[in-house]
Image: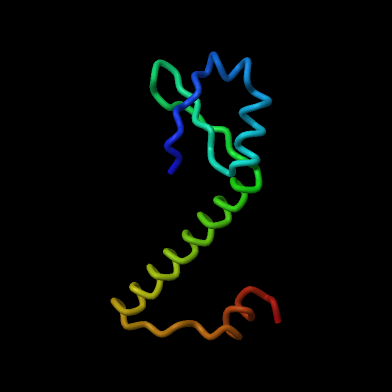
Length: 91
């Protein structure tokens, strides 16, 4: 996590271009603060897209773990892939 001092929102208004450049080149978020409290961050769009993909992947992993746990708890068998495709009308 970034340990840089946050930039106040009022200062950020005057430094927006350099804040964006800093976030893009350093690949670290630039935090914005209001009354000494972090309220927002500027982050490189590629870094954000990577974070979103990782979050989506993690959600999928957790859902799969929950499904496996439910199958163990209920002692049910997985549905064969061919059956799933047939149920969805994909065959």
